[in-house]
Image (cartoon, rainbow, N blue to C red; front, side, top):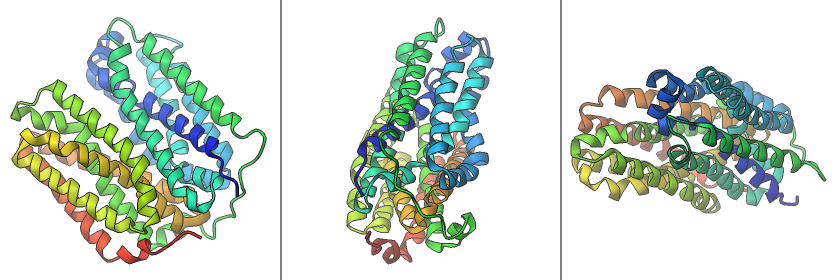
Length: 382
């Protein structure tokens, strides 16, 4: 099987564009609220609609990708482009929300495809790298959204920001569409069972549980880090730079670590290290918040890298049902983000308790990895 790295690159661009449009308004909530004449809470829904729709659409999207991979993925790409265009039709909150809903509907079709892209584009031994690069594209879109919003959008005008987003989304969709010309992706045999068969695999269930806890910790940190560090005298600007550094380090970790982990058969060993690093970092944040810079960057490096490691392991176990398996992982990650972030919010006014809660979540990962360490670790690729 010939490697088709262009398809992987095109997917990474589409994934980055989707994440970029998702978080368009998150870094400029106050300015967007003033521009559209609505409350900051209303602007929050422009981002919050994504995890809510993801919970509903994740499994159907995974099934669609397993049954008709390329049409489903292209639908996600062009829904993202259409959403970016709709936001430009009227300078109103209603148009912005309509566009965000379209992008949110496309998101599960894109994110769930990260393992399937590697399966249909690369020979088996190159797939861990393909999954890593696809995942890095996803997180790169998140990292780009953080500085791009304040740089191009303000209360006076959001047009430059929305135009850049739309152009990037359309260009990415065109690029993905063109990668299908001149050849076809290798056919993947139908799955031996359905989603229930994937869920019946005990190791997959453990990986899904780890994704719930690990991604939940990351989402909670990105949501509440500034508020939890404020009592220690950490400014909004400093906290913002910490978050940006954490995400950028996570992009680097996602691109570099998963292929090494897969090559060494060390999936669960790495996930244990990531859990210990996250838990230890949260303990440091609770007891010595002034040392936040020392821990947030390595925490981002291993936490975000854990997701492609989990995705690669589930793809290896699920085979042709990798789209459905990826859907379970992403669904668990989004659900964990909601649950853990809400629990941390309840302890927001007691930072030590909030960070302690996150450390506990990390500790709960350890028993999920210990018993199955050999099962995934010694499952070499053909």
